[in-house]
Image (cartoon, rainbow, N blue to C red; front, side, top):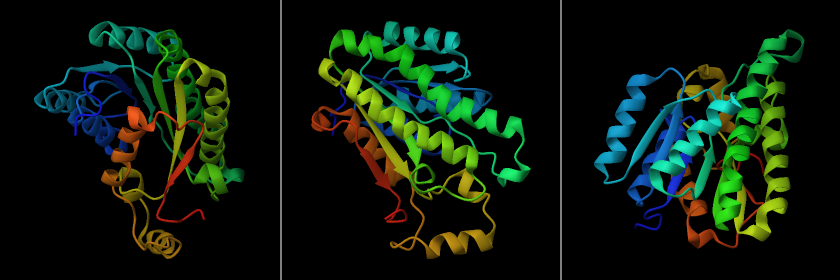
Length: 248
């Protein structure tokens, strides 16, 4: 399937886990992919090679998502390299889990800056290009924590809930110009984050999931690729849960 043939796509936080899977799925479907990284130079170089081996262009940029100036430079570089910008996947995120009474100001601000402000920065830098072209798809990767809240994740839940609100507001603003904005609300997906769970917490989490298992990155990437494609041209403002039924 080459339903993203020739499209220019940006994926943030793509050197591992969900972002990496989305970047590679987009390339398999024919998209040229730009992605950022902060410190992971070797994984970034490996991902770039893998994308290029699929016959697509790749652009790796060392960019802090919280730095709007650097983000704008990366978005402009991607547009220049690919000749067009059709899609953005705001995937970059981190956790600093603690109970509220133990949470520091830095724990709060770092999560908000990366997970929410970072998505704003990339959307702000990209959306005008899409509006001018009268086409484009933005995907904000959020979480069931933003739908139902999770203890120990006041900062993360706030950021992910903010992404949902941002998705709906943006969708209403730019829909008339052919730009779609949707969100993926993820449950427990097998990544480095879930690997850090204790066995007790992992067992408890599995007990809450109707499908009885954690998701895989391969459960997420095809849905993201679909939303980036023209096949999803009548879907905007949606929050699609990929959570095994966790947040029903």
